[in-house]
Length: 235
Image (cartoon, rainbow, N blue to C red; front, side):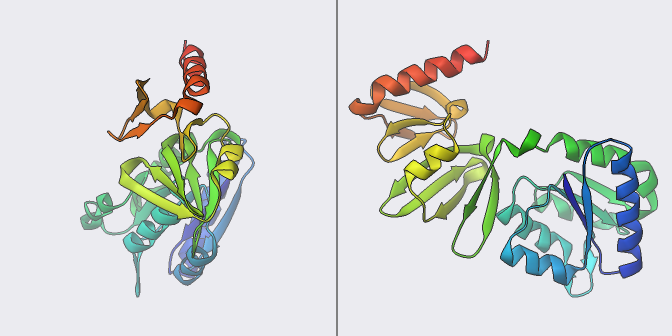
């Protein structure tokens, strides 16, 4: 488990990192904790950000913690963001981004265990439910259970994610299928997550986001068999 803390005050982020380390040690889970300045976090978000949990201040001089959180959402949706701040009046602002917890610094000792437990509960076991893709400017870690389907046109693979998010990478559908063999090929251009299928019949596949995709004749038999197998595994 990889954790980080980010605060513009060097002394406070060292203290916070120490408290997070102590809390993690009590849980018996292998972990590492890095203390980052907002400048260091910003640079990491441009080059690759693979933390499972981050404790993030909101007001950090010229850096806006909510904007940094928005960038974390863009490059690593699986990362749990725990806001740690002195400003209660900012509590409503954090709802503009996906986050796990909000803690006032004055209540850190009391709130840290619950916040950490909630964040750990969101981490996919052994990262088996994550896929890393490379876009033009970022490496992204996506939770595969939130991927609805992928399509390919030309040399560009597009991944359709819950929350109407779309990510593109220059990979093949064959590569994607190798990474996620449980996804079902319904067409030479489409791979779908069986957990997001609402119906599969009459040459069409209806998905959880309301999109209906064609199921080609050449793929229909195997697609139906894989979907039946998936449904049987639920019981």
